[in-house]
Length: 286
Image (cartoon, rainbow, N blue to C red; front, side):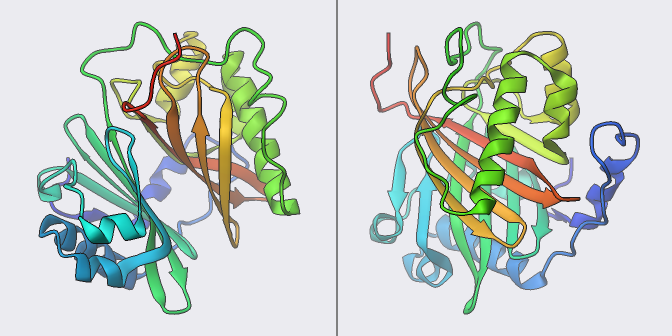
């Protein structure tokens, strides 16, 4: 485990070895912009001290903070009272980063706590768009909330109308990925997932990488990561990158807020990250 340091994007290129059967190719990772890593460290220092002034200078106008209980705060709410982060000292855990042009993903893990931060490059500089926490379960789930037997939504339809050809392509890949998950079709699932994929869910007891998720599908296990019907959806588009934020209501259980990072690689849209936070304050569907 790396302590107190960022694992730069170039290191992720080693993941491409031996997976030619699941993706067409894996180009060299984009170099991290030192400015975004400085901004991320400044943000972490600011929230540790509840310094709303510094947060103000780093947060995007559309910034949201989702805590481990699934409560989502707007930019204005965060500036009024900075929430306490789930990881008090990230130096004691593992922090990784990866650049995708105008979008940077930073992930922090410590014990059962995980955080994803999505930075976007604006004309005025790097700004934090999404901060999302996940608290993993203490043990493996016995029941995974899902779509039911048929999976219409999100496998065949969505309560969202694409606003561009890019959104159409991303959502087509998203639905194909969900369908492959429902049918435990690991080879097809792998075609829609980037080599560096990672996922954290508050309905699971572990963070999954691509290989781990494919192994679970081959064993017909959902491991807390099952497709669930979409209630609402918002997309943020950047060159060859789309951030997909959605609210979900399982057939049984509590709703979820899910943030997914989609990237375009070799003319294909691939999911690079998925953070799924259960909304504990909402009533569960019996």
